[in-house]
Length: 175
View 1 (cartoon, helix red, strand yellow):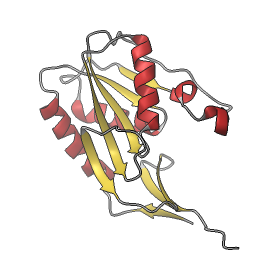
View 2 (tube, one colour; view 1 turned 45 degrees about the horizontal axis):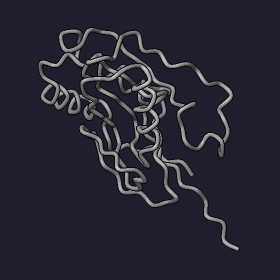
View 3 (cartoon, one colour; view 1 turned 90 degrees about the vertical axis):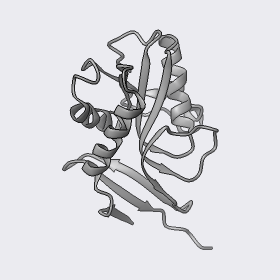
View 4 (cartoon, one colour; view 1 turned 30 degrees about the vertical axis):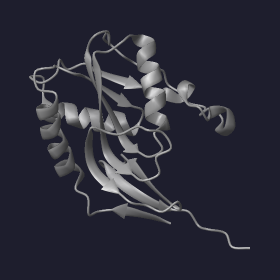
């Protein structure tokens, strides 16, 4: 079963996150990096709101598929696209953006990939949704909303007719 979450106004949440980003990273001219694919959608929207006076306009994208610690178990997605960092991360302040922070494994993989490109001065993590279920000690610095979900529930950002959050509930099989 899939339900669209309508009580969260994504545009209003992004505006609030942008205000917090401006305050947190004032004077640092951060580079924006979105994690494929939902984090890239969020990063593009935040870039529009923040404007070129806050950052230089270049947006990096990470596809962390090769850095995941579970791809040997779940397999590689057949349409893996490369990461694109059109700038040097060396000694720069980075704003890493993702849609949902759950186990922490995606962010760990993103950090591993970033450090393959160089050593940033700092990395600030911004997420649209933080949910319970962390497996690694990773925390977001800027959070749009926090959701408490059961193990059978999953939240996902979709971008078919604009950004929407969907709550998926796995059917539990009873023997």
